[in-house]
Image (tube, rainbow, N blue to C red):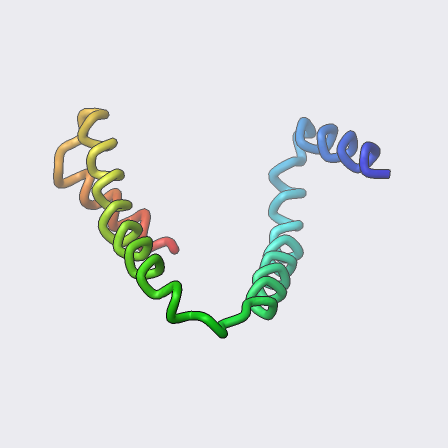
Length: 96
């Protein structure tokens, strides 16, 4: 059954109607993504959260500081101005 679903998905992805199919499936996909994260969050246990405070702070700082720096460096390497690289980072983060 799984191989049949894979072949059907592959066939539909090559179809000229793939964008219409994708737009109609988006609400269903988003619903299952929400269910996945609710299930994942419900299984978390916060008994020893004190042990993880330092890694949480370090990784969060890396995300907040490292992500903009990586985007700005990559945009600079591609030849964009600092102003454009800054605005691309702002647009990237504003969508989330």
